Amino acid sequence: MSNTPHAIALGFFDGVHIAHKKIIDAAAEYGKTNNIPAIALSFDISPLEILSPKRVKYLTTLKEKEELISSLGAAAEFLPLSRDFLNMGAEDFIKKVLIEKYNVKYAVCGYNYRFGKGGSGDTSMLSEYGKKYGFQVKVMDCETALGDAVSSSRIRKLIADGNISEANKLLGRNFSVTGTVCEGKKLGRTLGFPTANVFPSHLTVIPKNGVYKTRVFADGKSYNAITNTGTNPTVGGERLRTETYIPHESLNLYGKEIKIEFIDFIRAERKFESTDDLKKQIETDLKLL
Image (cartoon, rainbow, N blue to C red; front, top):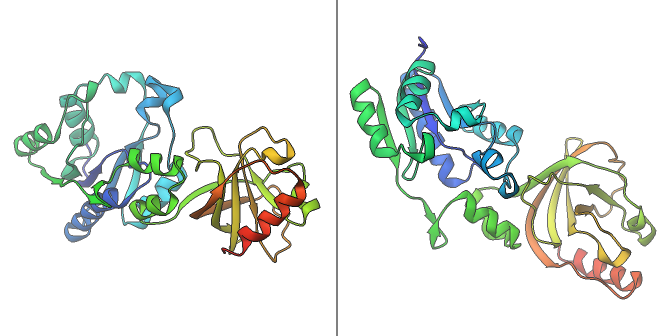
């Protein structure tokens, strides 16, 4: 058993959205007030990666999630998930993980938190065992915004539908994609709009195909930009990518990691009759920055 007591925020926390933040904030505040470590306890992968891999789409990478949690005053703890762990009973999770591994003194979770094999454990069970073993449990009420409950699944759908501005309100920040810039066909350069190409992971949620107002972070600086997500059908593209054009800058970003923050949807991706038509449209898009 750990000798160090912990305040623990419980959840998967994909996206670390505004409802997640309240849970993590509560653990961080308790930890600060009582001079004990606060952690956000999660898993390294979603259970869906094991149970239904084709359905997995993340809002944040593990690195991004860790950074977001840390910014809220808690340490991120990612338990390695396996089929054996998924088969752990709810009571064993409380005893072996929360009590024996982390010496829990304060546990906070959302109203719909489930744990243990098949989600057999719930907030009532957690509270019951808290009274039995001497740790406090706080259950957060459902957080609503823009007329409905805030959830990672809702945000994923908004992003997939291109409703970036609403998704950002639920996230409490701009949705972003991080990746390494790769060489493309360099056709944008011939049009006078050189782009930075990033091929997102197939596990990452990507906004629907279209053009977006974005902000790019590279080499310690940030730039206003426009980003196209899709396959670039006008020039015969096939593979899904993000292509970002940063106006009035001449940057060599090949091989460098950049972060693209999506701010608002401009228009849907479409195939133009000619590259001249595409160029004119891009010039129109840039006026919206």
